[in-house]
Image (cartoon, rainbow, N blue to C red):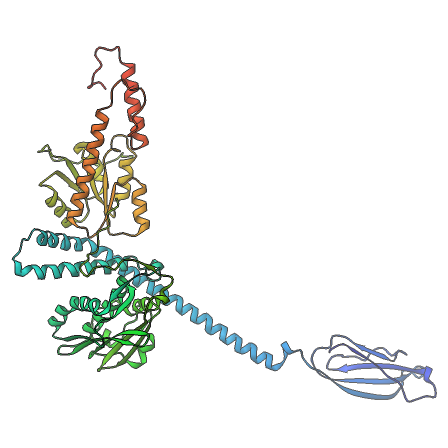
Length: 552
């Protein structure tokens, strides 16, 4: 309390009417108050501190002669928010705020570096898909047409299987920014664990033999049915096993053990590799973390594998435990509950067969253009224009299709528009990401032109997510195929589209000239406008003897 009042009285009772009172507070007032007969002292809003209140009585007749002086000690305590302990608390709080701000700034910098590194991975994965197509397509052709000796077929199948695995990894990287890739709904099925593990381990045995690493799988059960998402579990095991083999030196060992215990089942991977420094083991599940001993050995890696493993294990309501001793080895154990009651948010689907391959996803103004010399058409076959900026892939597509079609090719959309006017193709196959003019822009230009809108377009791209697919289909693409693609699927798609176009052409040709209404089979607004303008022109010139097809 810093506002108070008090009454004073003099002990001189002879002439009380002649006594005046005056006071001051040392440290707060510089002068005494004017003497008066008012004996009440009122103090308002006195700041916290220690003061001395001095009071004196003076004579009213003898020129303020002082009779007596008294003093009293007054201590005003500060409020809680202004106390010494509060000040200490404020100082601590200020230091904490500064630490938090510094931490936020550092995390922001780390996130920026991590995002840049992830973007690099995504861009690299995108670039990989084109040469991956050039690997996969010839392999498929060799296997399907039995172009090698029987003894070589298992090796070719193994190579093709790992190409598909690489495709899945590049797809994961391209879609890495989408949070639902690793946190979306699980698509679970029931699998026999020993069979599943044998299939997974089979893909690594050749690699282990090449590295001269002992690679063993064992279990403490004969038969065990468990529930999980096959694709995501495959990603978990492939990351763990590839790390184990990658960092285990020659003559080392990698042991995989599947165990059943109570209401849980687990998979344990032990290796005799380089291990992880104890001081860095707390950082294992951070984005893009790599151990210092790995960096020093110059072993290549992305640093995102264990982070993905951690997320996918948690998505299955599982646990992951890692024990590692540097220079001795690492043990990774993942544990999951039995049954499927813990996966109540998952979607249940039919299990995938061991030999099931990843299916290719098949979805279905021109001024100021450069003058290009278009080669002369030599055959009467249906015409296809291939637009692809990668020389190897473009040449490969031309080589694969030239036996059944008349093929022309170019490296960008701008050149394609010039060739289309001269070549008049029956179908256009175009990559999306190209210089000068992208495949999307080329498709849009074709579909919005009266002269070219009838030409079907197949788009090829490494961007296989739903957003890009919808974007391509919305601008009028007739099919959408992601890289790396199967040549067989591409050929069937081309055949079906051209067959459908030929069928439509026959329907249009069968329309009687006297029909007053427009055909019901028109596929878009430009078709309606074109047919309407032709009918109008014919009707206007019905009496002109010189009017014919050439004039029309």
